Length: 578
Image (cartoon, rainbow, N blue to C red; front, side, top):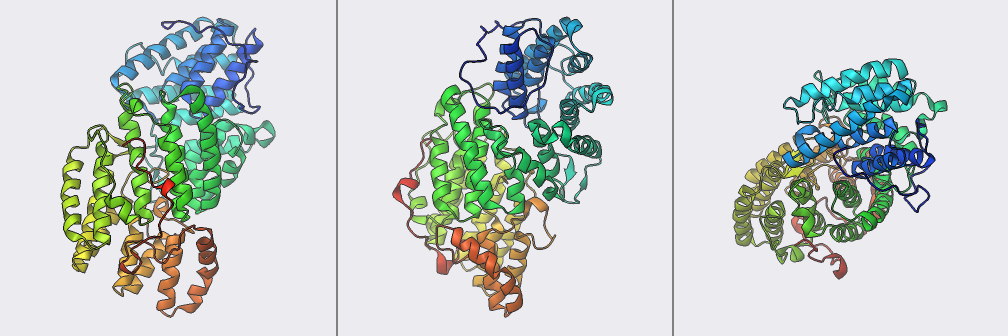
């Protein structure tokens, strides 16, 4: 191995509570078995950094354990959220060398392994055919998936083999198994083969399918972009709380909770997720790639709270999140952490817009380092422009609009917003700000054209859960339509946002959200459609009862509801990062 081997740590030492899942391996060491189980759980939980550490501990306890080297090679390779294309050159060279060395060590010791372990070891060689980075990543991904096929054919009744084969197939076209606009499988992806593998494995309940975190996790990712994400709810409920100290496992079911509009359950599970993640942060710090997942889990909590109208939950979570991201982490060059993490630094600003904190926004300071926080700088100008427009200061709003465009031009194209880029997400901001300013200038037709353009940009963002634009433009558009008396169009917009028809893609529907429930009910009453209004009156009442701010419109930008109640001072800090 090219890296210095770790000193063995007794498995009996205090460690995270990862539940009881495991996979029996060939080893002479009980400690190696425990560390291997931990490594497998962590990679199934998408904490590949900790997974690699655990596999290295298994090796330290049993240097001849072939499958422990396989685990290390698997952990340092690509995954669904970090395919080969997203490695920077330094990270890529390091991981390829580690993976190559580990896979060859696995092969070296494979003589004493079981036939199943030998088959996995043979397949992992195709993920690292040389110790130099490849140039044709699709071919590399396909080569590994093809190599896993005979492993699955022979050992497919083993749930971990099924999971690993499905993972290999999914990584051929990550986040592209389905066409969101047709609702059909992507013809360039092995979608139906993935479906067959996962659902056959999930049917093996007596063999522990409902206790396998990797299998359940992958099924959520498989089904969430489909037109029927509700089919994954049972798997999600089995996964929920399965691995107590793995924050991302608590979080994953909420990918479906959000799509179903189960905002309170999403808040509860993501809160548990952040508590587990904070435990990991206290022990391991922020200087690791799992920080991306920690912030994603926080983001999901905040997003759900926003749709539930729970400002205190959202702002408390923002403050907790920001406290775990020291600026020096964003300055790490390899992997380029600012590219991965800066998207989360503007979340507070989106929350402030959602809850109409106009006076606070007008005083919101710009980041000290506007190069490091390039995207946050642009979002700050956008939000200040919205705030000035909403309070009638159009001249200041236009100044912020100009500054927004200048800042937007300075955002590096490498800055990510999950599966998309911050520069593309800012298209939504630009069109929304234009619409708000035109509206305050009483250029209503121009305003609505701009807002419809913002909606189009929003709908066409690459899939992510949560969506990379945090407040649906439809909420502002419909609120302003109502103000101008366009009730039928407003009702149509609310209906689409609530997912009460199929006029927009599945991920852009937000069932049961308090903002559209309130707006749609008001529309129906004003239109005299009392029978329809009665149908949603009770859901609207429940949603309004859950919210912690009075909600009189779907957006605080509506002129007759332009000022939100004052939020508690401790929840409106400027944020540690800026």
